[in-house]
Image 1 (spheres, helix red, strand yellow):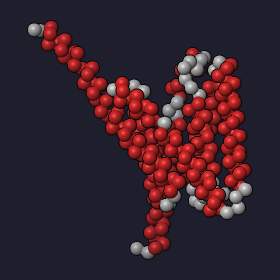
Image 2 (cartoon, one colour):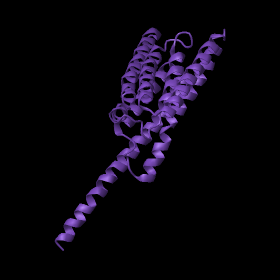
Image 3 (cartoon, one colour):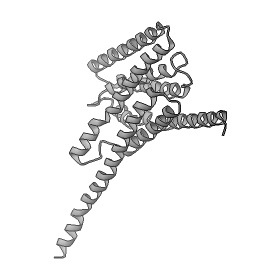
Length: 239
């Protein structure tokens, strides 16, 4: 097989992995919808926090910027997935603020303005770096750190599942979407030899696998535990 043919196959495989990552990411982006249905229905944010949406917005903005031609070469699918993610997070933040109490609304507005301000500094600051390699390293390290921090956030949920032996707070489809999206962009990063893409998504893939294993273990265990009392009561009745 010629070098050009191998390159073409690699390019097709990379684009396919990127498109798959965009599709699977949609499952993550729509996952908060049930929460916001409840918030809108009750007209209150209750005990929910708006900070995860602020963090997600910042992450999407930085990664979106990294994927642009001004920073890295041929990473359009990184830009598209994070552009869509940023729109979703911005909408969630607005909806949250509309239903929040005055004090929480002010805090969210401050956090939103701070997020936009920090991103503006990163954007204009990186453009001041004339060396394209150094510019890519600067934004790449920021996007990598941001992604790793986002993928590390489920560690609290993983700990909660182990402590409570319940998967109530770890929805299956959210864990599955995380795993599939991370795996897709892990392959995308490996095929494009982009360390700033495959390292954080490799970590995300590992955490996704852990979540799915825990879900299978504790979900089946919960089902068995819930059945045992019925079996025992049935036997006691006829003893």
